[in-house]
Length: 130
Image (tube, rainbow, N blue to C red; front, side, top):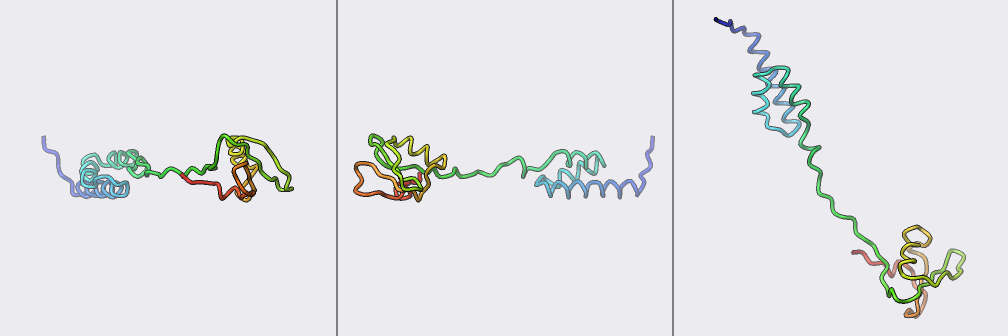
């Protein structure tokens, strides 16, 4: 059985292969392999590369962990802070002060004190980044 080779079939096979290779290149896949798939399987090769997805999306970039900011000071002392009306709040533990800072009750411009300090100090001066 002889199958006649039509020049239009060969041109369309090359076109399908070229489209598959172009799409593969855009998705960071091997364009030569996908050219062969598109050439042999035609429109099904194009559908295959389209549904195969991109390597860019599957590989997530490595992210640096965000720095952790903590309040440095003795955990065995009672801490106090001045609220916006300059009223003294406390005594409280270092953990309670840290919670108040994380929830927004105090900010870096709030004055804090414990018995080992000579004077009231801005909270931002006790912060340490890890």
